Length: 119
Length: 375
Image (cartoon, each protein chain N blue to C red):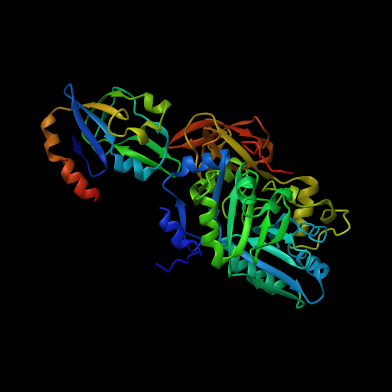
């Protein structure tokens, strides 16, 4: 699993990049009450706002970590946003992306580097 | 950054895992480890303990007696103060010459003098306003050696009665002074959550001991400012500086109920408060806009500042959200805001613009969840 400075995790499954937010990010947000996901099939560019995530405290965005196509979104999160607090790195994935070259993932932080970042 | 003030319970908050944030010049707990959602729901189902010691506690006394203080305060608030019986309190507002609201407050008649509780962010201004405008026979004393706790929720009475059995005899808006182990407790049966409960003024030096006793009870959890805000929003209660301010009149703010008939046109003590001309006229004819409850039809929370429109296409903004978020007990988004009077009727559909999209919102009655005061 890889990590971004925006507190997202990236995991490769069946040649797709699965994206979610870290437990650290979920804890900082507090109880998540609303999630808006992108449309499946859209093409996104890195750092484009693709999801809205709102907690009892505030609204924030999830940015696309890479250029690519959103091929699948986790609609179960829309029905039960609290999954993000319960299982941030498991059930609570946000979307799956198809990207041209999976080797770009090597540029992201590994778990040890991410843990060092968040202390 | 200026130094933040601390309440008598600061160390207690830290010891209990409070996440501290600046609020009205104080370092206050926004939440505890339970989190905003669970703290909110716990208050609704059991009992929540809040530190509200940042709020201003003020005594008004007079060399000419209680009646004179009451009539003096009526020159600054449009409510019936002289009609307030001993050991009772009521909600009030300070108005300005334009008929706007300077602050909202609680006014209690102790039988000897008046005891006020005012908002933290406004207290310096309120005290200056009282000193500048009340007659010389009135003494304004800010009480700084007492903490203020709120214990709210359906099990608040049972919990507090273990320490102060007297509270079972109190009803909504009673304000009693009770001696407990030699300390004077000033207790009112009131709050800011829509729940039955109490606000408790106690000497600062016993605050930590009292809070420790209360949270040791199974029913009681500590509740931060985050849940305090979602609880009051569900209860349809105004937050000063957001839902009402110096530009909104009490009629526009939909708190005209706080102005008793005796202060209105034709009443025995009609007018005689700042902004009376505008406020009395609006009480008769209505205002051009009104604070209303708003229920977003989808799941997206609509926060303060969200613009409101008559239709999905119209370009002229008709109002804005003044408070909004997620209501844990309603299990959905709720908000309040101002709308022109033509739109301010329950069931009217309007639109909010959120992230560039127009989303339907229904004007709805408040409170969003029925209040459970023990009247």
